Length: 397
Image (cartoon, rainbow, N blue to C red):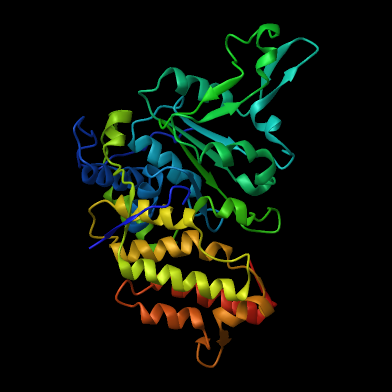
């Protein structure tokens, strides 16, 4: 049972599917969350896309709890398609679902948002279309909008995305994105359409996709501390054949979900929804990481984010609380375990090829001690991979 500890205060669209299953494809206006998850799973199948159901539940839970969600993984594993599938399951049209390809040349938020043309005295929005989408969302607060920054680490995220990092942490009632100084308002010809700042309500969902290769930039700890980084699992390819067999020829339709209905999926709480054992594990892990480096650890923000995620975990037989807690450690804590072998080996351990495993690992020993919380399958896989990288390259990212 979760312990009610006091929370520290600071602490462009898919093509229409060729076929649809026999399952009802219309989500009723009073549908519960379980029905929506079923629809999300079926929508992915209708478009011929193969995802783990646990990944879909994990992604949906992250999306409804807000903040910045980042999908990571191999190129071609369906990260952008998943965002589109989620939008379609919510009944969004192309105006509500905005996919923004990030360009390598972006160096500040003017490349994304636009700038003031002082020669012609007009505001020129960025060609990403983001500003127009946010203005439309502000004018239609009852409708949901989804913005995806595709391949967002092709440019330095901390440069062009700096405003969003601050704005997304604020309460939805106070979130405003600054376009230009208020003093320019009476001087710009198109200020009626492009105000000095735009309100970003909770009807706008944000997600990014990233590839990790030699053509991209790595994230700073500042961004990783604020993001939920989800790596999609690649399922056996035999499942693709079964998908084709399941698809039936039938017209597809999705009822547009309202903001109020989507809000009803989220559980708001001001207390820490973590058990004493979960809190103790994170406290011990924080101390362990701090011994290796003062830049590593688990802050109040991460503890609160994990608590909110677990409190919002929907009823499901594919993602238990233990599995969800395991994933949150990977998605919010282990993303920052990177650096040279001299720094990380002391708590990750050493990879032994003859044993196909890790030896002398304080982190694994800690997970073993708290096996009643979770089996930590995902965490163990990540630690094994990082130990292998340290053995081969002397460095892990």
